[in-house]
Amino acid sequence: MAILTIASYLTKRVNKAAAPNLLRWSLRIHESLSSSSTQRLPLLPSPSSISMLPLAQRIVSIEAQDDYRQLSLPADSKLKEADSEIVQLSNAWENVVNQTWDIFFEDRHQRFKKEQELQLSNEVELEAQRRWEVRQKRRRQRRRENKNSDDADEDDDLQIELSDLATRRVQILERYLRPALLPNESFDDFLRPLFLCHSKPHNNFINFIKWMRSEYLIAKYGILVQRAIKKFPELRDDAAGLNSEGVVSGVQTADGKEMEIPLEKILPSVDTVVKAFGLHDWNRRKAVDITWIDDGVEKNRSGGDNQGSSLSVELEEIIHDKLRGQIAHSGPLNAFFEMRRREDSYELWTREYIFGLASYLLNRIEESDKQSTNPKETIILDIGAGDGRLTYFLRRAMTELMKSKNSSFKGTKGSVTITPIDKLPTIIAIDDGSWKAPIYNNKHIQVEQMTVIEALNTYGPNRNKIYPNNEKDKETRLLVLCSWMPPGQDWTANFRQSFLYGRDDKIEEGLAEEYILIGESDNGTCGHNWYTWGNRDFYPDAVENGAEELPLAPYLKDGYSRVELEELSFLQFSRFDCKRSSESKTWSFRRG
Image (tube, rainbow, N blue to C red; front, side):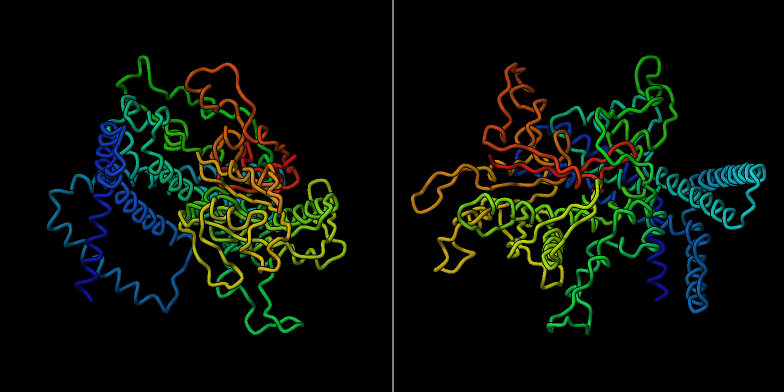
């Protein structure tokens, strides 16, 4: 046991000392491989697999989190008496290992250790001085305003402590990242391939930049996220209540069925999200013409007389301005998504949004039934469904709404009433499994693994799989949902494809009667900005050849119109929202 403890702690010491250099050199190798292999053959390994950059990132993440815990323990928690002996034993072994380390490796690491201790000492003194000055200023201000409330004093002091702790966490992260990003601490470092990648057609540094963005947001806002989740348990994750079969143990409904966990225990409300993450002053609409570079950042840009000189630029400016990492004007909401550690997590579903979308779909089905001469069965496909949460929530919301004769949801302009329909539409979650979304131990959540084409061929109008043989000629209506379509891909052309309809093989234009897209639109990372959204700035011929005459947007050419569902867009919270703009929207594309 003692040998394992010593080995474990020695490994930790080695990792902490080696992590910055490992990240630095693996990034250098990655840059070299990326520069020399712009046109890579498909069978050759990627630069990341050769450069060991992902391994370096993982080690830095682990060591930074360990350092954060060392900061957090004295301020946030008191060790229980039951743990004291274990802690004392662990500390004793750590002291032995520290002494052994210093004896055998003192010559090699003495200078590094002294520099680190000096830097830490200076930082502690500066932080203590700053904290004292801030507290004195706040106390004088409160005395002038005759605010003597003890609760207010404690709250202000707590906010100061949290702000100080967040600053120190960012400083820790910067000690790991800065040697890799700016090894020479000069403007010449900004001429490296890493900082020029956003202007290249093939960016081999996307994953590295995403990782840095995630680590920065967690360092700065992670403590606030932890406090918010503790205060509002429904924010633990909107998937937290979906495991254990999603039912209340030992409780049954009046008809003898298992009672599922109420949606209000799983899904947060809009007000909860706003309060938890401090979004009261955030813009809830999408802003136009937001530039990457903020005022005052230009002074740190390379060029002119600054070439080769030393520089003073903060880590936030490096990630946001130089690397397009989008962290300025961010907050705890953005860190919340990053702390999920899931690549498929882009939207935070709220109760109001789920019931609003369910109401909209039921209303659309009712309107279509009134306009149709023959009754149709409605099939709703959630394509690219990931773990199937959206389908699960919608099915439950529709069921609740249909039980009420006067169903409604509260939107931004008042309550919107829906007309109940006779039968719940068939809702099916489809995903090809490429994002490796989690599979829940819940019999109510089923995701069928198939591609977009396979799903449309299986469940499109007049397809036979869903009905018995004696019902195969029953007319069906197809509605499609797609949340955060993968960047650069377009599935909507398949939604709009023509098909043979009825016994007479009549050509019907538009496989889906309506499809709804959720996520960034027009100039974002959902789908293709031209083929999906019709943004002319991204028309391929115009970009590549300077074409002057542009055709109709693909969806217009296929006979569809586009309508934003503003009531729903206002209820959305997404991964890339910021204080100046809400990025995710809900759009309806309708045939005819």
